Image 1 (tube, helix red, strand yellow):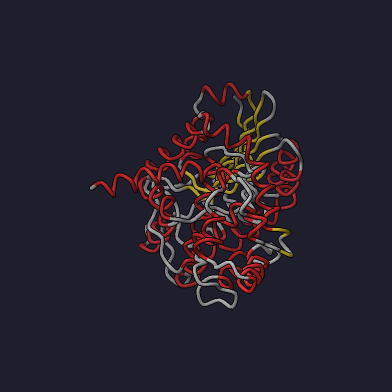
Image 2: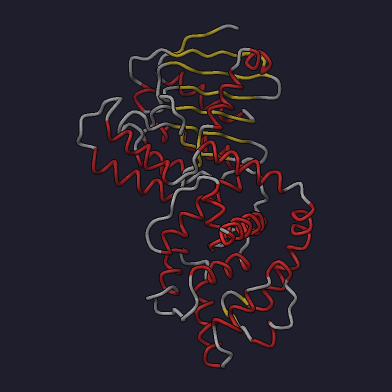
Length: 399
């Protein structure tokens, strides 16, 4: 294993860019990033995402107070898709301080590590020393590097737009404070992150349970019948831009896993009158309009909104969203909440819209880590949540 020394400058970042163009799988672990540093290699990162069959895992830290700049994180988040490009925040108990690139090829790898952070100065002009090592992947594996990276990935979480917004707010408040490694505010930001994610030990239990559910006959049956059920549901509601729900169109549907929505809309929640049906269709047109953010839509149709209907709360509306867009929106009801509590999910705060946005973030992480299909994956996760939640509520009722 031979190490060649690299100093900041054109040769250094050109080698990084060249490997970004060629490697099939890339791991970047950085303690500190800024936007100018990201800008140096942004177009190369973008091409990795766009090329089929290539993956990049970018893991950053926030242990150094106010070091990783919100604009840099936002810039990387624009590339994050949870597939070709994965942006992760280290959320383990140890201090995160690596500066490392690993470029994997078929049987070989290129490792670049040293003192340079992913900042413009670290790449081009600071007093830094780095080294580049080319060797077989098996050698890197034998030395424990690949296991080390896997452990870091396990201790990292997918970030969300809401997290970035919260981080930016904290950053703006604290940017005038003296920067140091153990600043209390740095711990506060870490604590904030953990409020929006799952307790690591219990999270793993939930991931394992979801993976185990994938092996059951229930899961297989649901997955097989799902496409037809989605089509039936959409047919009963009508087009998203022009819903035309009619009782007679819905009450004859045998929707299997989707049963319940018909009963609540037409037999309990909303009286069967033409005027009410017209109002419902207006509500659905707003709710299902993907051209507007889900946050804005929910504020329009929930209590206090212009298109709100009595009885149509977050449970019912999220049920409709799940059935129309099962790849994007989760169901938010009592069984789901009880299941999440069992597995250590933070308590939800804020109004119903804020709670639902938090739930969307959680489901995105669950789907990725439990490896559920992107298409209709939330509907399959919901099946597990529903069954678990009903058991919990049943046990509570016996006490």
